[in-house]
Length: 281
Image (cartoon, rainbow, N blue to C red; front, side, top):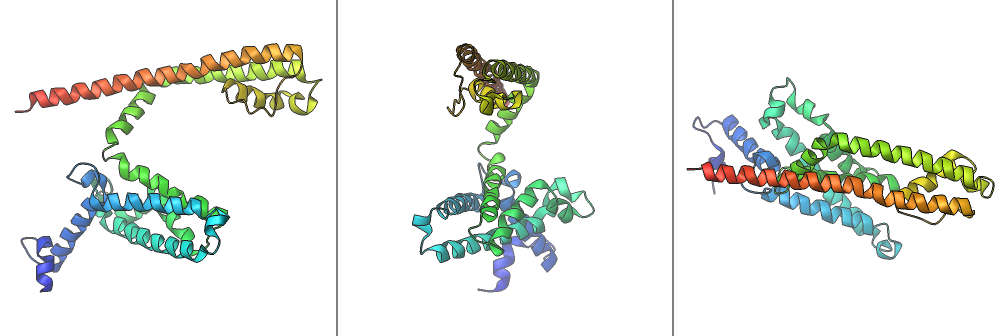
């Protein structure tokens, strides 16, 4: 097969190699950038990358288990290098095609501007560890930056409406959430202070100061209750019971606010979709 036949789909009307290169760049850009993909959901390339991200993260988790990794470390190392090479190629392709993105095309140096964005730095940090260290804690932590890449790929795909609805829900009730946060902070301070007053003498190692008592207040108000710190005096137990009941009510407040706001956002989205379909010819 002639080389011209392979590049034929990418040739413009003028036919020079530069035009073909631009067409190829646009094609790669549509595959890598979710907003440019004309179909529903993610492109085949992004779907493959998303699956590879999940597999790589699972492998990074399994690598920390001695029973699994014993005698197989070379497999994990080779796999990590292979994944890093794939993502390095993908990173280079994104840098190459970013000039097709209207968001960056207006800059004098669009590629450099893209490379200093947070998401591009995350992409780079997910690649670098494989070429410097294997199995160390720092390397493992950096590999998990790939999970953030997963959010990037899915953000404007099938789940984009859900992400936007969540953002709108949080923004619309921001004042209510701020009020609830203020109430929680006051409740923590009051609870810690009262418990310090009741338990300081009986348990100076755990309630000898308000900062120490704040740990108990936070764990109790959030209804976690680790059990490492608890009151032993009668007054302390009474205060603990009141604080525990208060925590149940405080937890319900932001949950109800978010649920109501999210439901309203979904209903508005459905109404807009129905209006759009009704007005379509």
